[in-house]
Amino acid sequence: MKSLVSGRARTGFTVTELLVAMALIVFIMAIISESFSAGASAFRNLKAIGDMAERLRSAAILLRRDLDETHFEATDFVRTSLITGKADVEEAAALREDYEGIGERAEALDVEFVCLPRPLERAPSDDGGPILYRVAHHVPRWGAGDTPQLVRRDIVGIPPLLA
Image (cartoon, rainbow, N blue to C red):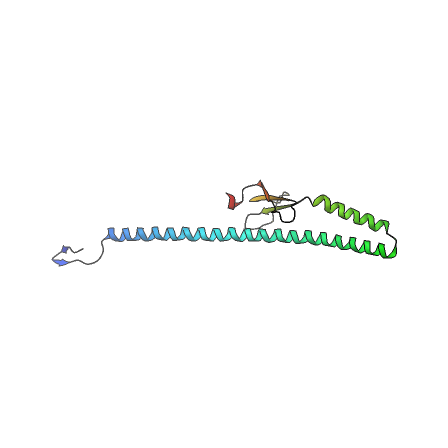
């Protein structure tokens, strides 16, 4: 990089060399920025999956609690009837209705998830405003030792993990 200008050696970089170096730096920064953005997006998606699993777990706990509560009431009713030798007809009818209701719904577990766009604001319309996607999950009843078969149905939009 030595050239003679007015009889002495010139040191430093030319404008072309500086522009090439700046272009390389910008290119490397763009690659790093894109990979950081992809990592942040993957983290958000994994967080959403974890939140969805937590909601499913909560729904299963509530369903289990309802089943346990009805079972406890039935056990108490049978025990009292056997001890006293009398059965309350109204209480028996109420328990039968509870079990029929659970039996009708116990063939499958159905859950729906709705994703709203951010920022969350109250919608001026009666329909609740825009949604990004809405997904329904259906799990038919499974037996002991079987693996549950989850069936997903996209109602509106496509979840980002599946796009």
